[in-house]
Amino acid sequence: MKTNASFVALFTVLLLLGVGCARHEGAYAPVHTPGADLENQAKFVLLDRATRNSVTVSGLQERLLEDGRLEVIANVRNRLNRRIEVQINCVFKDSRGFPIQDDVPFRTLILTENAQEGVRFVSAVPGAETYTIRVRQAR
Image (cartoon, rainbow, N blue to C red; front, side, top):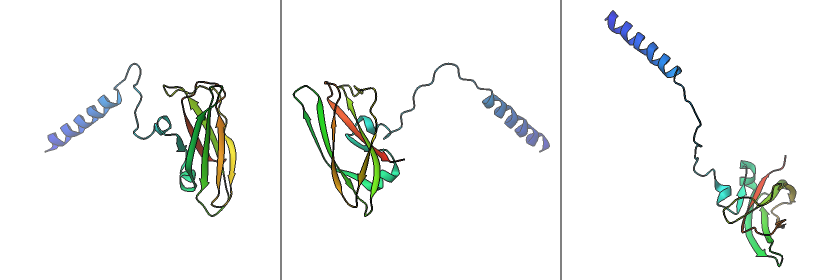
């Protein structure tokens, strides 16, 4: 009986040492998390839990301007019965889904109680075929 207990203890120690000494050489493949790539698929995304509970979009309108730039108007609605402050931006993308502009700053949007406001975005350069409007809680 004592031999079995010492064998199990020795086996456990050797197993833990073997696992602890395992090494991985080289690069790692990226981990795909289902649902985490929503910004690549949706035209309107909410970036945090607070905006998910307080903001929605009631309509999106897009048109191509004469000079080839894309114009987007979003009707952003406050779902709460109090004034809120959020930040919003629009990332314009090419046909493959890559951004066509380097710096896309967020701007502050103040929505009064249960209000809806149209927010207009125009791409800085021609060639935008799609976009993603992103909203986050103001910091």
